[in-house]
Image 1 (cartoon, one colour):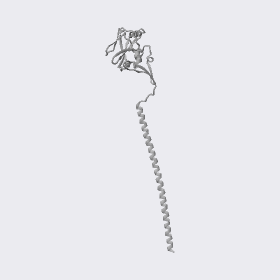
Image 2 (spheres, one colour):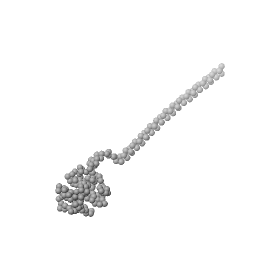
Image 3 (tube, helix red, strand yellow):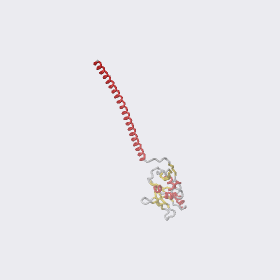
Image 4 (cartoon, one colour):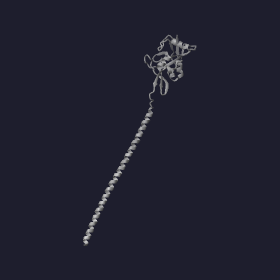
Length: 222
């Protein structure tokens, strides 16, 4: 028995029911029958790189995706996007659904890819059936301090630079004013002191000259 995985625009892919799923090591036929017996659709995941490989969708999602809990809340992101055997980069993960109540039980229909799993909570719930996707995925706690955007750092640097320039200008103007006041006070003291001494000396000298002339006239009259 072979299951047909078909997506429009891509080559058809078949899955042998007797092939073992690598994660669970169970036959695909057993996994499909177990899901259908519970009236649940079964989901397959087809991994594209240099080769095409098919896995149980739930098990592959646990390997590829993780739930991150941070100060911003909870979100799903890609954890490993390398092929688990060769570590080759995965190009795409495609999901296919095998309905339990269909007239074509051997045909799997394409329902989305890794982007669909990331953005759609409803899609994740369908893939994991009764198991909560957030509980099934591994958890990564990230509570590191949130870094501010670089443009905020640039604004802060520019603000500090402008404040430094204004502070330098302010201090320079104060120093200039202090120097000017000191020069004026020093010049005024020297000038007044020298003038007063000069004038006093000149007056004293003039007074003694007049006394001498008076003495000469007195002697001449006698």
